[in-house]
Image (cartoon, rainbow, N blue to C red):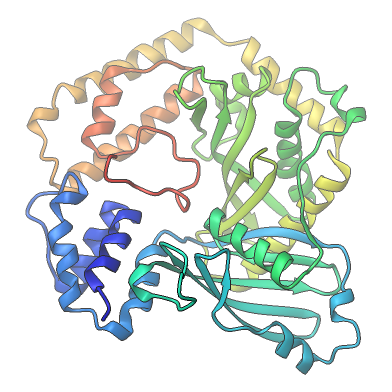
Length: 437
């Protein structure tokens, strides 16, 4: 007999509190009188869903619960060195060979692949089940089910490019290993690397950062995608955050408008994430780029804020092709990249101290005034919280623009009151909230 409460308990441990509250509301209509502070406050209500969920609905429920953070069109890009594994096979034989059901992998996973073929493209629909422990009896035990994920994988036979469409880095790593180990496909990652003949021309600037600046400002613009930065995360070596990561708000303006971004670029900090507003063929959307892997040299590309499938596909194809060429050849337009880096350095070096000090003092005073009013505000009022969050974001952008790089106690109070995450989360889709947190 299935222990549905046991499955629910494992799901609750791995999803954010806010998602658990929303699931309870969707299933029962429950609305909390006051915002729960921790998961224990809603644990009994969440486990009570066992009386609503039927045994044959468990897998779909677990999938729905853990996939709620997947946003936009996320993609990881891989190269396939040869297609010998498809030689002398008809399309029907390929579908038969590479469509599998509930194959055990790495003891704790079960993978199902459904393959279809159109023109030059092989397209997989994947269902990945994750269990809490290995199957000692060789039988998949739903009582130990902890997550169910879906993903799409495509292989372009002309370009020999394989794309995994899934936002969770751990999941896509499992799928990469499955395709390369179980199917024996000769796959490898496209990785950012240094080109010695180019490094010497850049001075103290991180080569990885220079590559990404060239990607956005030169490569993509030459392909018809115009971009402005909204946010950049830098690895700073622990200058201002315990984990060595500094999140800089750009606010959708020119990069040179941010004094703090110019500082980090000039002193050689690595970009490890950026979020941009983009325009392609008259359509506006956003693209988030995360640097993943143990060496932070693999790009996860996520297109968001548009439902136009044609624009998403065309834009993704362009970004992927430039990413591939960037890994193979390095910086595309060295002269323009050097001009941009020089402008950034001049912005950093010519900081106007008088104007900066006036802006800083007035911004911090405004933050202090709101901080002193917190005991008058209702932390359960959604309009109040949303307005406060917008106030925080706007003032963070101002402070980052002038190069303010200190921890302000009043700003920290506002962030805590508004329920915003003060620690920098690199990738929301990988983030797992724990009971301790």
